[in-house]
Image (tube, rainbow, N blue to C red; front, top):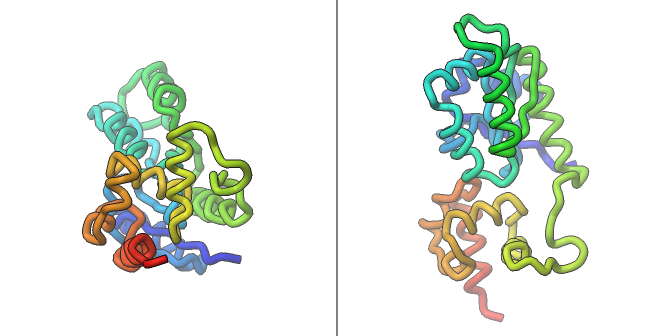
Length: 211
């Protein structure tokens, strides 16, 4: 079994969840994530919100910009809402909350999961990571070669060492083309979420290696 690894945004530390993940023997580290709150196995980005946070972000007009950042940062993502967003201390109409949830799920196409508390949130994070190990996330390198040009680009990038489907998608979004991606330096690669110095070095070394 592969080892489950979760990167938590450092601002999540006061919630106690990163510590609870460690207590569950899950390899967990703190970083300054550009989007989302938890990054699972370098593939899945998760935004965690309490019911109060969700409604407050709606009132302050932060919700949809956060959705945009989530979409841009990772091809695989979802939002966890802890508690009931219809029952908070904020004075907001029931229809407004329902409309926001529909917009996130339908217009932005970001799945929304609900948990009753932090313990259930942790269960979701762990189960999500373990699902990856039984091959629930489709990988374009398997099966026939795709005919769609965009999927062909993703297919090609997934042939590089340690580049999965989500990371291939982020690379193309970041650099804009295959050519720019292939010409990227190690310093440029580490600016992409999910690529550290070691992985960047391996990618550049692989591309420049003589046949």
